[in-house]
Image (cartoon, rainbow, N blue to C red; front, side, top):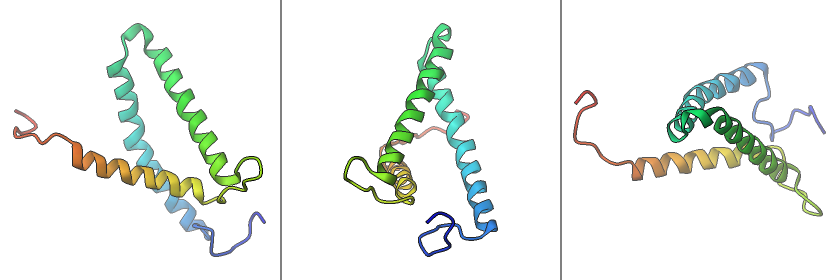
Length: 113
């Protein structure tokens, strides 16, 4: 039932919700700008606004579709519940961080060189 206070809820008090919003804001501030910069770098200037729209539409559709499947399932499959999309996203972020740490090219020059 919605609004129940049980052990499956991550945030059970107002300060926990605010802390999660702060953490999300930090993530969003770091990730969104770099994603937009990548789209700008990969797209010719006359097509940049189309590329931004396409990128955001695809990301929004995929995120909503995957979250809905994980949360409520499809057909006869009931899904995993409300925490599943968040755990899935966190797992993907952890995998991405590990892959980046392992595969990033090592530079021997300084930043200002």
